[in-house]
Image (tube, rainbow, N blue to C red; front, top):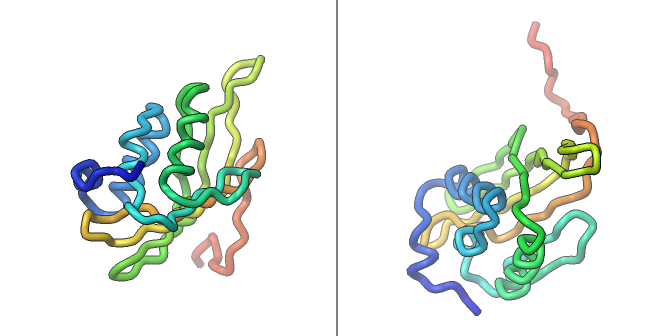
Length: 149
């Protein structure tokens, strides 16, 4: 089932705004809004932490539908690093994920990369790759000094 052009046209703005809509849809278990963030292409790809490569809109929709059957996904993007060009954007970020445990809500971290393409419908997600993180905040290794002198 491919999304309609009307559904895809409902999201406007730059890659940052569509990414915010993607995470809002996760937090509200809104499958239609989430799928509207994806490009209308057969080769889109999604990799959930520790999961297989899921290719195509039907398969991606099914994975999120199964996840939403257990409720929303309380994930927030943080520490976004961006590489931007005229027709594509790559966002590497940390997802702060609220996980319910017997002791109450806990925070876990996931490392994710979102790849956005500029399409006739606007900026759309073509790949989401999330890797398992850790229970504590992930430290970043960078060649950029963290302290300016």
